[in-house]
Length: 244
Length: 244
Image 1 (cartoon, rainbow over the protein chains, first blue to last red):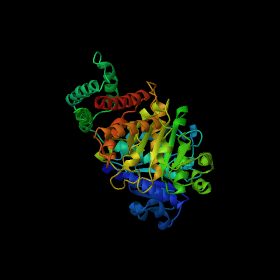
Image 2: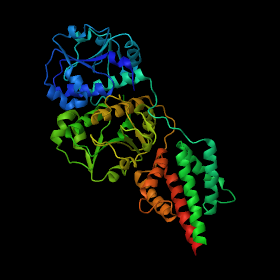
Image 3: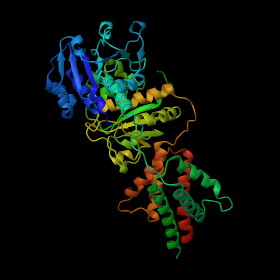
Image 4: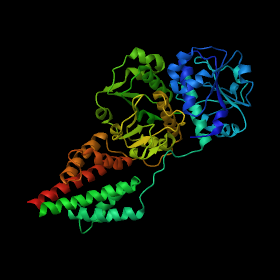
């Protein structure tokens, strides 16, 4: 997953309380190909404490944290600001999900600096904080527990944005066996299953159909075909060998 | 976001090290409408330590954690097992993203117990652990830092599943064979493949691993297990019969 425009995202933590959460946030950013972290109206926090959770891999993000005494100053350089909330209400205006907003954020980030703004662990963002925001996002959660850990909320939003930025659908695309390979294999399977008396020679296709269905549900690789044909050969060899 | 079938998902943490990560995992489950957590080959851990991160809202999940001494026992009741990895490679077979796999998991969970299996914080799951899995998932991450914190990995997978469950449109849900049935079948397959000389008695597991992977990629029904066991019996019968 590579997208140069992920550099244009910055996570802004407003009044965070726990250095562990900040360190975890730094690690999430690194996981998702982002790297800029700002803290507003809190800290400074101990880099050593934050690095326990960031791991040394994301220590550079911790070392570059920018601190601001006022939220307005922290947000001043950004062209687009996304607020996050777990509280829904008409007072907050329209609220989008991370999945809904991410394509447009990925697009905006090509020419704009985008801030992802998160509130304190306990209270979130106030209506006053949300005034700065161009849009507001809420992560869909269960009624049973709406309060998401700060770094987990950061992770989900950054994950959605990085997927949208990459627009990549597949992690790994397998190369499958051809129909020619598959049919040759089934011929051999049929012969050997008849030889051992598993298939009725009068109607071999009934059970063979079930076997085809079983194997066809998965996509077979060339290597799988070779393994199955190898087993068939070996069954025949074993039969002949014991016979003689 | 409400789906009764989220009850059919269980997160299985194999050899986890840190109670904080387990507590965080419990909170993520609660956030996403799930509630079952199993620990394999580790612990027991201090409930008090785990509850620091679970918060009291997810303390019930911590209190109900099931411990198992062996991974095979932990997984025995499940009809479908999803492994997670950060390492991609052809040796691991096809790997899906959480987004790719979640719709089918949401569907399967209507009639099957599904395990989401996560390895230790440092080492993840071994190839041997992945043998139990019907499919393998990797979270798309930046090249800069591929290692995701355990609870964040759980969060992303559960988030994707809960979204997919909420969007789910009913098609057809197969009832799959349990891990117990599958493992019994592999024992029989192994014996007969050794008998015909396909597997090397010194190292039977090498080729067996490839066969397991081939068959596990598809979800096996109970009927499929019976067919494969029937073929094994018939091979043995044919060998004995011709012998005498």
